[in-house]
Image (cartoon, rainbow, N blue to C red):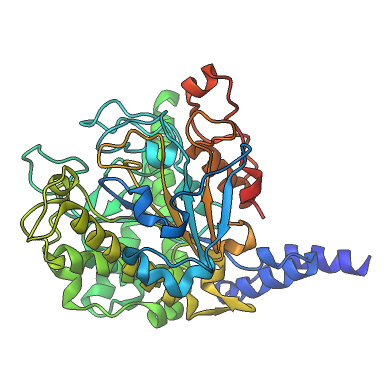
Length: 470
């Protein structure tokens, strides 16, 4: 009875002005009272999405290339006794928290250069020239939505179009790459300019002088506009009130965010990155590294518990890596660059991505949290928006995961290969994402659209993969 009363008290405890600083401690105490330390800290989710496919053999230890599942069950091998491919060398220090997943398919999505929203939403888009509208919240934002934060899910991207070739100017600032969504029909905005992202994320706590006056003026303007909308709503026909309600909700969300940010000023100032010339650089590698710096600071300060970074696009040229002669699209079609073969170029790009991934993991591992570190309560996912190849047929969709995943998954430290497409026990990316959501407390029956060809073959494809959930 006493233990039950303690649990009830801790769960219902209301915090005052120190709530932002003390709420993680209270959550920890409440979770410990319940006997489940997994709920003591917010879970963090980072999705790193590349273009031009992720070659399965390139992320498979040599000794595991010929091993296949038997009996309809996934193949599972511990990574500790297997050297990683050279392009994955940066992840060797994190092998105990690295997961390599092979064999999931995604044929319900658009095949070709990019699957757009399908890569994380599990549905098709109209064609390569149109992402269409998202049918649902994508898995990245759905996971992080269970752990509210001032900025919600943050999207960061390099400039450029997913496929390219339109001749339009390269977009700058806020862009909509057709990759992630917060709800059906609501695409997640991505910030393509690191300096603007820095201002949006950390400016409220760091600004002074004229910057402070501008921030206060904007706050006053939001109050004024919200009041105007409330008054206008009383005078318009009922059919128009829904539209005004959407506007009002947006303004109120901005106001609430500003209040929360004001209370977090000290935390933001202590954890904000240093604004350097790199944030305004035109070099793609500088901009991408700046995005990773911002992502780490967002997670460490608690401004966000979810970040998706679009690592590149088909028109991007990796001149900062010595690949100045060809863009990603040409390399994907087999054209080499600067004396390197196309495969060598792909290895260079992948190694660079994984170095950035490892750098983010190292920063999170350096921050103590409970009996471990922030990395223990983080899942970083690396994938391509085109599945297994530059022109993805989507019979296979490889993934890398990194982090302790809050103890909810059996991925850390393991290589997992699903039975091939069409075989008994095969799983789709819908099964994988369903597993993630169930493991993190979202008991969905199935996430995403089905593969009707597997249906016709009488192969079950709904629900989680039980062996992936701890």
